[in-house]
Image (tube, rainbow, N blue to C red):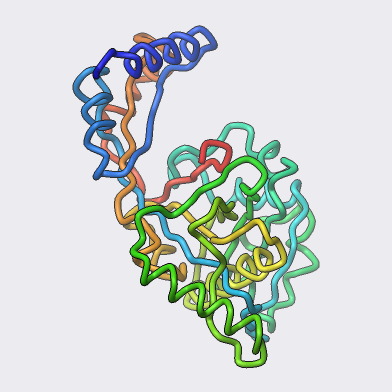
Length: 293
């Protein structure tokens, strides 16, 4: 029975957001969720806006080896903010948060990591906040890691019994013979949390290799957290980082539909002649704020 409860709920949320200065509202859903898409695009006047990819890799029971040819630096929040401000000017990325320093120092941001070739001598300068792009080596990769396990729980539903049994068997074998290093994964059919990699950026011929090292680092951090069963990243469909992020295709979403609606006419964007809904993407890079995940 359709009572219009969903419509009234969204409308009330829109009023709440507009009263606090928001110029736009957006939602994200799976393209197969036709009921949600119809509600927002047909009844509530939202427009399809972007279609990023959601890449997910389950957490294995064993640590992944890290390449000795990559040096990984843990950046303090001030240095991370300075690095991102150099790498990601507004013209090069969409949705960059205006309070980026606050995000990077948030308790759920575990850290920001920078991978550079181990032969580089730039580490002493980069870990301070008094550096420029000229201080970076020609190849590098950067990633921030967010712990969603304390605020979000997911569960895989609808899997056939054979798949459940096979994964349970692998876990049992691995528990009894860990020396075999069976590629077992955690129980994804019960509620679990995830780690979200955000602010992913790479450069240079060795950038993809260095990015894979950071993804392995994120995986190994998740291994130590029994509440985490997957490491995920959301990226623009044509973002070159996409090819460097390990993921399981069946565990990922090739199209995460974002829809947007303008809540207030004549806002700051209109004054400056910049309307997101009327403008095509200016870049393939999307900065996904993990607080909205």
